[in-house]
Amino acid sequence: MKQILCFGDSNTYGYIPETKGRYAFEERWTGILAKALDKQGYRVIEEGLCGRTTVFEDELRIGRRGADLLPVLLESHKPLDRIVLMLGTNDCKTVYGASAEVIGRGIEKLIKQVRAVDPETKILLVSPIWLGEGVWEEGFDPEFNEKSVETSKKLKQIYQKIAKEYGCDFLAASDYVGPSEADREHLSKKSHKILAEAIYGVLAQAS
Image (cartoon, rainbow, N blue to C red; front, side):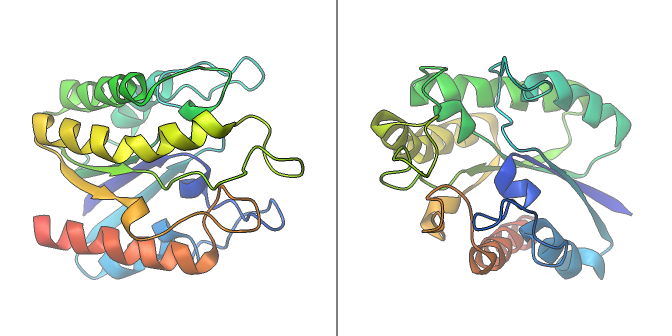
């Protein structure tokens, strides 16, 4: 059986913006993708974690630095046929002060980690959805500000260039879905379905 590792943050985890709970497996984009690919002999491995970054250390929550955990997962789930990599939203937090270009360098580090373990593993690089306007306002997420939103909008162009340079497939989540109005940051249940269909389309075409 072929294996696909989905490595991401809360929008891979399936965070529910209205309740702060978690969507059921069959409602998350990873679960919808798993069902679609099951008959083709694929096993989808979910590795979504709230607050995960590419390379930045969260001083308040352990284990959020993607570059620390990815090599471990690559080894524990080996062999992997494909990896869907969607990170960058949390890197836009004000505490990190990172530009889109710096966040892109973090993504490059993760890609290099994958290639170091197995150069044959195919990578689908997904640039994340944009943060919603006013996400920093009271009652939403004060870890972001106006600049965070601007940075999130620049990631598509940066990631697309990186994907081309490293021979990865590419998809911009922001071309298909946006954040829920409930928290201006996370996907709605409907958006999970739309994103799953978009990702499936790229994987099917690339296979």
